[in-house]
Image: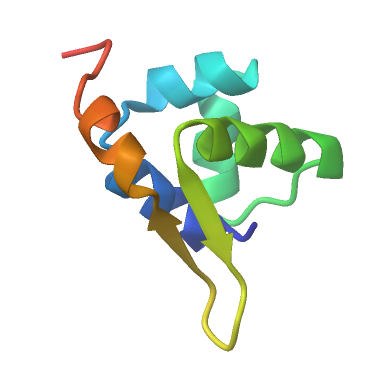
Length: 83
């Protein structure tokens, strides 16, 4: 996963930064730092990626990295925990 994919995944799921941080068991500032391009430990990036995958995101790593939200997760992702 690359930083732009994290931003795309968060937008696709509609989840708040706090939700993803809690799911990945990392600080919100960790995700912000990653999305700004700061290099993180591989295990931290993997934890963030697994959190997105559990929310229904599939990472696409072809010529242009992207994300895909699985249809069954679209309705569930609309329910945010935070306003």
